[in-house]
Length: 423
Image 1 (cartoon, helix red, strand yellow):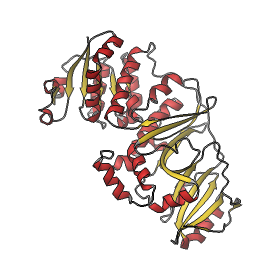
Image 2: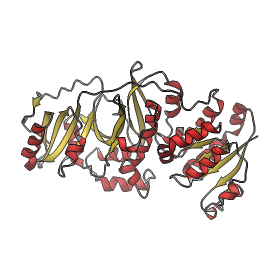
Image 3: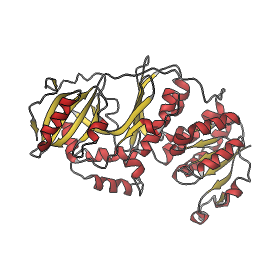
Image 4: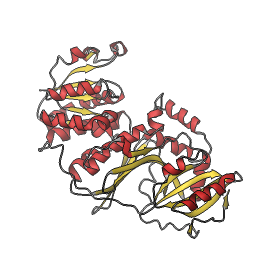
């Protein structure tokens, strides 16, 4: 008999519980043993007094850990006490399936080493992109393929907000409030709208794509609360869509990346990802572009990932978590950005461009406002440079492989282009 434990019983783990109980016959036939849910650890037992499974619940950790388990599903969130609990379980050779992205991003090396040392496993499919089976796909099916770059829309809250802002008729604050009412955004949305959630997921993807855990110091992170309707208008005029993109690549020395609002063109693989959905784009040397998309959060999608992860971990023949990953350097020779600034600052911006290695590709004025949008091509990192200027917004552009970047404006080196007015 396989004895199951649950750490936490919120949206995700209650979904796992329902999934296991509703498909019990199937799971037992696949595994070849009976399944028994033994204990559920929660923070406040009184909240669940009317639950049918109340007798399985405890808010006393010592009571929970006095039981024997063959598998534990963890969805408590946060670093502690989850880290201590999972460490204890792995040291007792009890496998763990977790949806805790912050924990895995910050302590992945420790958890994998413990699982290996004590002949157990830590499964974290549900930490990235909800119901999209990207973690085990990368871990087991794309071992030979060298990943050049990984990018994605990794947060359902921010993608929902951006989708609703795109028509230019609503404010960020209004859409955020709606997302909170619908359950897409937390009461405190900081982790989502400031990019921490996407950062954790990108760190996990980097381990799978490039073969090593990456520090958060190797990423530039920018939030999205400053977005305005005219950002979207400018994107429309330039044939671009604004998304909140997390991307990373290996430059031959180290992995680096960004999490920020980003303009993408209509040919980009992530351009059609709308509302609360997530998408992941993997660029490889031989396979080319690999794209997967689906629900990025929610009870059933995330619970699906956890149950599938358990079956994957249980049934795979070889339990190697530290296999050598083939990697290949990606060295972009240049990158495009959209700059937004006040017309009164035009001379100062142009001087900044002349002093640096930037080419101006297109300039337009938005409606009858003083807002100017400019596309530049940079042969060096320019996000930090322009971020230092208070009145400038800067967004990277990602283009699909078929885009010819023809906007009808001839490229000029460090010069000024005629400003077109977009109404």
